[in-house]
Length: 245
Image 1 (cartoon, rainbow, N blue to C red):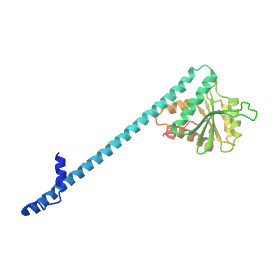
Image 2 (image 1 turned 60 degrees about the horizontal axis):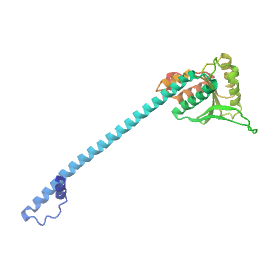
Image 3 (image 1 turned 90 degrees about the horizontal axis):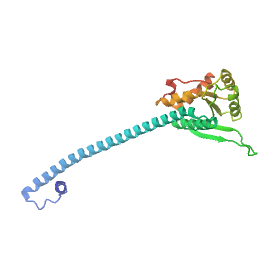
Image 4 (image 1 turned 90 degrees about the vertical axis):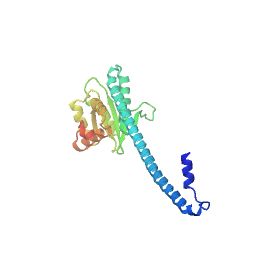
């Protein structure tokens, strides 16, 4: 009710009905009320704008906190999936599960991922099996996932090397092994660097990456690729500084 009265006062324009000696006085008082109302409204608008900005910042902070929690939960879920693979006794099932976890891990940092696929020949016979494909910097990286009881030897890496070399020059290769690599296998992949960028990774590297919420899968892969192309180090384990997100 008070607001209605004040609004009517501020909207008052016709002073002809006032007593002649009160006309200027009434006009001055109405002008003063208008000034006070305008000042009050300005403070109110500023307060409302400040409150809107505060609420917007609060919503953004809550959204960022929720996203951080979601990412950490997702990383922890992937880490547990990797660790739980040891309980799968059937090699074929364990290999398929490993492919899925690897693809989901590379998706964490928004890498373009193509999951496992099979290429068949003209005879419709089953051809080569690609465990996964990641695109980084416009270069496709063919992924091979291995889970053997012993360290991966030359026979375990040669097929993937040949698969990569049969592609266009811009296609790279990555082998992830749960059991590590023998020295001859590392040397064979190093020789392949003369023709194509090739990388080796141990599964424990990914487990450690997922345990660190500040680690970036993309930075990890970029560091490994740089070491392979420049330093000819196919089995390079990036330090904490190189993988910080």
